[in-house]
Image (cartoon, rainbow, N blue to C red):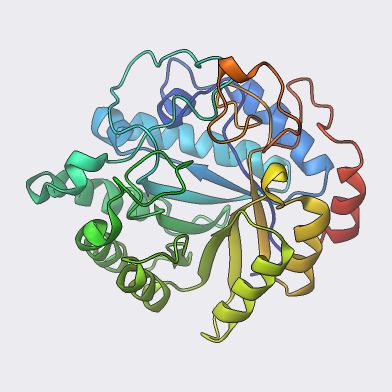
Length: 327
């Protein structure tokens, strides 16, 4: 993968979740263009962006038009995109239409799963998911603006992503759907972009899921919200599979995963680096996991994100780290 992928997970500040980002009524090309410009100015060349299955069911042609418009804006700024198709994280209940307002000071209060825990566990509903995956990949299979497809974010989560405990999570319960998703994607003739599903949980009950993801991914993606020693150990462990590596989520300042500590490690190993969050906005991921209004309007350190809503850096000293690590 060339040049070196450096970037972020991107949701525009005007959107609380995937539906608000992509629905016709709230799609915000001016905001997207502005915020991607800030990213490009910092040396970023890659964004990881989440989609949602309900948007395909509602209006597939319109959804594709908006994806194409987004890709055009990103291309203008020299940015390619990893699209995420499914996601087991956060809220299992959701609907098209107006989305909820952010809960004060709460991390990712409106983020939603796709297709949602109930559908993951109900194979009778998978035919519409198959139509979505195949239709989406067929439409964009030769688009050079797309760096790759992250088929399924954190399969097996199925709960509040900020929860350390595995209680209430899907675990290998998501494996049957994951297997189908890979099969649907591999059926597309002439697909030019690589496929991946990230390794994110090394806990009990995830070994089979992780092994399947690593074996069937064209490149190995992973998440690490821990400090540089743990990050380096994960890189070393995954390098043994002989595939290209990309860290599709990292950087949680309060947890010891900072740009200064971790980005040079990723760069030195040639591992692509996509931190969580670009601009402080409705998803409010500048607040730590578990933060709420009772704890006040400002944590000791901002958790995720790079830019304030006005385009200035949350921490100006981080600019030097990006300059030293940019492609």
